Image 1: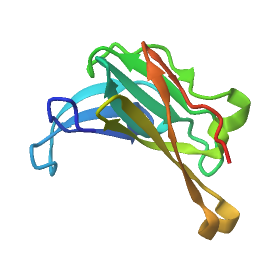
Image 2: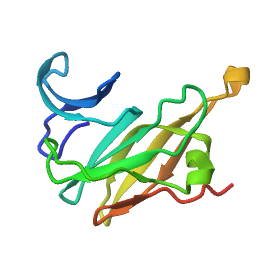
Image 3: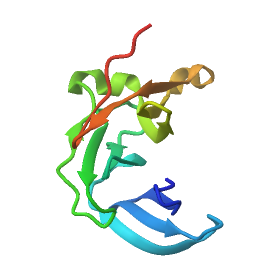
Length: 149
């Protein structure tokens, strides 16, 4: 993630400890220091800074099987982070996807955050797809509406 001030961060899973957020060097080739450990056992970490609040998304450790992706918020990357909540109806299993990235698109009239996710099909890997959709985000809430055909 590139923060609003141009600083680059890496979010990654560190089993069995959780998500780590690390500050990257200016050329993005080295980790300068660890910023935070979020003690949730998740993968598929994605991070975005939106209207003064950091949002992190992750999914449970279920391998190829989709599960409900969850999000947490903090006013600082160092935390503290809020309790994790679902980003979509639990039974939808995030519409069969797993988070990979959140892309902030700053337009001339509004700013949109796009949810980018993998849809893995282990038995037919050649037919695996992606889900890219705008999120409903702001004021500490994040929601992924149901995809439309």
